[in-house]
Length: 293
Image (cartoon, rainbow, N blue to C red):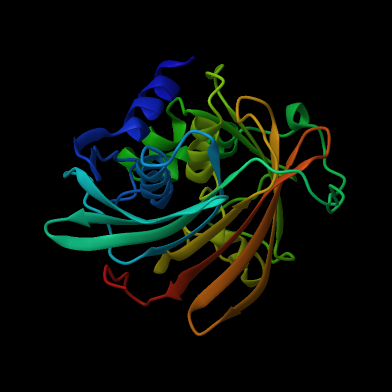
């Protein structure tokens, strides 16, 4: 396991401070606020630690309420709403400075057999043929603020490779709202399905809602652009490992009212549909950048 991946696993493990209370440290990725995927992964980690191991997460629905402060830890308060024969439900509230910054409902199920069918995986180039995120940012590195440049070019816990020819994020061309991104952890991980689930939750927030900007010739680096996640939904269908290649297939069916909606499907390299995703976020272009939502 790489050093940065090991650090992320520890970041998502959390400190238990009471029966249903957990504390997680914050990570500064250069955005100025806590990365949404971190809160999502930590919240799912907190919920998992209150559920019997015989039950696996099958869905989560989360709302981002306030920007997270990277200089402070986050407290996760888990409400054990229900434990039934087949399903268990948890509600998690993430708190900083006495205020909720995020909440999530998650449902867990015992393993059961049933009907089986799935979408077919679309054709995609092999991950090895796609440039890594670090390779994509190297040509424009000098245009970035020093801290952001350092973070983007640093070693990452995931190898993320977006299909298609690299574009200049400062001068993007308009294109359909579709994106294919290969994702894999940068090292081997333990055989813990819950760990793989909340690492995928973390990684699924990468380059997600910005898919809705593609038809408008804009990116998160465009002048005056404000991009922020509002909610994030995931359904887990089949077992998977995030230390093996996964393909996140994204499409943005709508942008309106300063919001964009993006949907996603996650496939293994051999074509198994293992998860579905959806996210809505703020997409605003200001004459002067604003901090508040």
